[in-house]
Length: 403
Image (cartoon, rainbow, N blue to C red):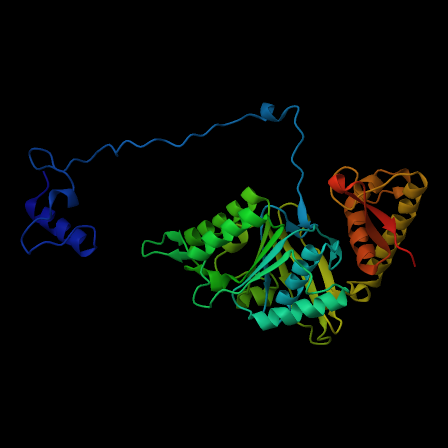
């Protein structure tokens, strides 16, 4: 039996820690606030928890996969931003990450097939701007559209939201550390259900996450909420972030808890302006669970916005190798046209990169290299995407662009 003096001390400690309801001095708390006792006053050690319905789980074996096609990874931006998942793009303030992500939004909404040297999908896009004011984003949209010869006032697929700066939270953390959804997150998911966007960009972590950025459970719970929305509605969500001092120093672009990195499938980092060349930047894929990590793309400010800078790649040998693959792509495209074969810009069967990689004349060049060449050639205007077929079943294929 527990010593009465020890019992009183234990109850007092529990009361001070907030686990028991405080009562008048010298009185024990009500029975429902303390541990239940047996008839002789001894605390009961083993008490069965209330009966609760257990969640239903169903394990499978690999036999369940037999006779089915494996699910192919789809990309919103090839090898950079996966569809149906969450990506974090980091960059120091003033580096230009909002500029290049606005490019991606405009290109997706306008149906342009490329973004900074890679192919992209088209469709509705939403920019949830919780940091940049409307006039700043308008300036970017108008400049980017001018660069690509697009009417900025005729983009029905580009949606922008600028919430009040006091109402930008997507989640709130309670005193117990648990996260609760804020009204803006409810609105965001309802909007995604209604409009079925291909891309949602959220700017930025500090403005929407009302929790402890170094608390692992809170970070994982928040990112799991966004990933669940992305998966259920097959949309790519890109979350902008500022790197920590260490993340800026080592080039990783990470900040706060490592779970920001561990809980997403893809991460991009935009470097600061180079000291010797203030107009140059480097976009790096710092994490990719579905593709190759470490891709580096040199960007250059061209007066209106950023463009890829072929002349500033890592070495002249790399630039020469890229040009060889580009020319091989064009030769094979001409061959397909002569044979009456059409190839698509999309992923999967029938795509130009996949078909070219299987050709005897490909010389061992892989589909990934042909896909990169396709992005460069589309950006340079040397090839184009053509739509054909009846209105109910339109299809897209690649052709050489007229000089």
